[in-house]
Image (cartoon, rainbow, N blue to C red):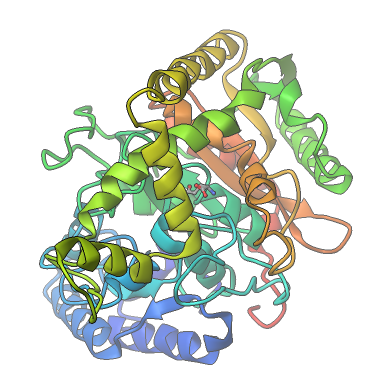
Length: 484
Ligand code: GLN
């Protein structure tokens, strides 16, 4: 049951081989059996089963859409009406949103079931899920290692087959990096493809929601429901949405794959490189050609991101003041004291660090030196991609320089943690679509991710290229021990 693709699950529901209530109960049981992974922050069986009953009623009446009755897990950054939305933070530990995020709303209208809300780094700041107020998540492939972050709970849930599919968000790699660490597929759409309405903001010019699934085909089905223009998000792009599932089988004969020298240089683990090169060899067998390209400003993407993202975060997180919603300190003097104690108690260390960096970078006198410079750098990084795409159709490389590291290994060293996203961050800075797909295993048996980057709004093509590899190989079908 739990190894079926989404299309097969949907088919079983429509043909009444299984009801949504049975299916939802099956996954709720799996969630309960895998509590040790700590993948979920909130599970509300009554809520999920009520949605499942409604889906079954729709199916009875023949009112069926793509994902009617399919349980989907959501990163706890998407606002859900009637179910807790914490964003992995103490400051929102009691927050129940009065409205649904557009992503949730579209899935609800489609008839999908909310399986629960998944664990994540606090306010999506992190690469290991260790900054969550709700504790670290374990990687299903090796419980001593991190699942990646910030969408670590969603990735662990899909990898352990305790959710058929999930949502995540990616500001600098948070869909792709955990997908790589957990041996699954994670797709960050082009900026503006998926509405950010009701998706709690971290760095608004970089944040993008997307699917975390076992395959590119599953990602396409989920994207078909959640993508598209939304008048409630001013950065949502008003462009017709293609049928992502219909485009999966396109021929890739003659595809030009660009390999940036900077993605294969110093810092890349040898066994990760070996696995990635072998996967690229599979693409050659499928008729693609490999071309060496340059992204000369790659080394600057991490410093650029760590000025821009904290700057936007310091502004976005100013709203958590204990007045309107969320945690409020119980013991305080005047208003300023209330703000200070509330925010000191409510935010964890990494979030406080970013608020301080961002506030500093945006302050008078430093704005030009840091924020403005970083914006200029961002333009150069985007131009690097534009020039590269004159020579190739897609860009490929490793998603991460190493495979999953041990829990605790980098939590005291922010720079080492930040360097995890060295191959993913530039994609957000340029607003491009990027996917991580399983490419095999390193010498220690840990999953390796292959990243495929496309041109702006070429999302359907990226999914097509990913799918072609998944029809020729079975890396994406292998599950960790205990989840087969
Ligand atoms: N790891 C990066 C960070 O800590 C990216 C996080 C994300 O994509 N949300 O900011």
